[in-house]
Image (tube, rainbow, N blue to C red; front, side):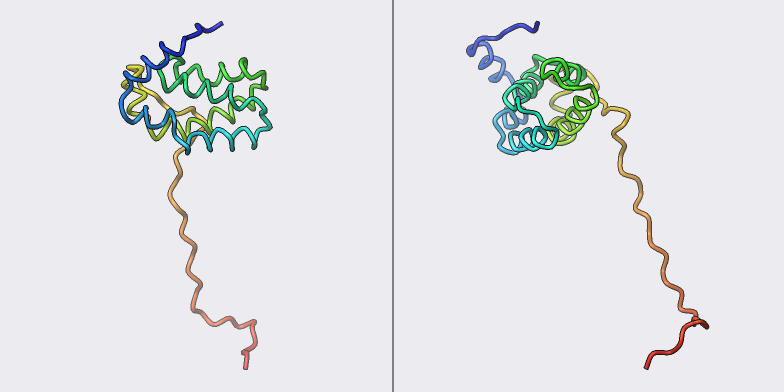
Amino acid sequence: MAKEYTKKQLWELYNKLPPTLKEVVFSEKAAETIYNVCEKNDIDRISDLTRYVQDVLLGILKPDEFQTTIGTGLGIEKDVAEKVAQEINRFIFYPIKGSLEELYNMDITPPAQMKAPGPIEKKPKPSKRKDSYREPVQ
């Protein structure tokens, strides 16, 4: 079981954070993301998921242990935990990747399944040749 922190200890950890992480801890956007992820994946324990996200932001839970922790802590299946972790990583952790790397002194890499978007395919231009099978429209 993970170590329990008092409110005072949590505030001390919070006060030591860089400004970018402090901003995200109480961010409305982060809270909305967590809520949407829970709704999409039928997770009722929103407050528990929020606590795990905040543990990562405060330096208590390593980002690479996040998926395993939410799987066991929330009692959800491995594939659901993977989906949830991917969305949280994408929308909450990835934008502040640099600050998290400084906090944990580690290189954070996205999971193998998260791929960078490839080049946009261009649609072929329609040919200007006359179609011999079409009748002219008048």
